[in-house]
Amino acid sequence: MKIYTGRGDEGQTDLRDMSRVSKASPRIEAYGTVDELNALVGRIRPCGHGDVDEYLREVQNVLHVVQADFANPDPDEGDPAVRDEHVSTVEEWIDSFDEELEPLESFILPTGSKPGADLHHARTVCRRAERRAVALESAEDVNATAVTFLNRLSDALFVFARAVNQREGVPEESPTY
Image (cartoon, rainbow, N blue to C red; front, side, top):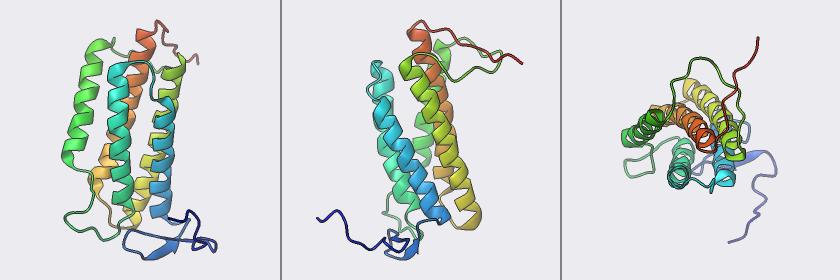
């Protein structure tokens, strides 16, 4: 397969159904930002914590599903799609890690150990992906469960960051006002 085709040289790209859209369309912005998030998660993994690494591997695979979901303006029943169980799984991870953590009493700075700070960074990119998905959802039909997944994933990345920092003995810092 040839890597370059020249089909995108004039600012258009193909969706899954082979329709052509601007590379600046909300749909492309949404799944392009999810792609950025996926690459960032790939840079974090392995982070040195087996359970987190296992979850991040699963996250990367589901992020591919999110991209396929967003790239498909007219999905059929058998097409890749984010489902409720993807969201439920992430909620289970959050609940599990919350048991390990002290309750938050204030905002914290997105810092810490290298993998902890990287997970905070991934959380912010996930929030941007979610904002792009919400913009897409307001303009076109989209799987709302995929948007919910991104919202929940950002929460999971936050608790992963907190847990990794705690495990590595790095205290959380609150902002000063």
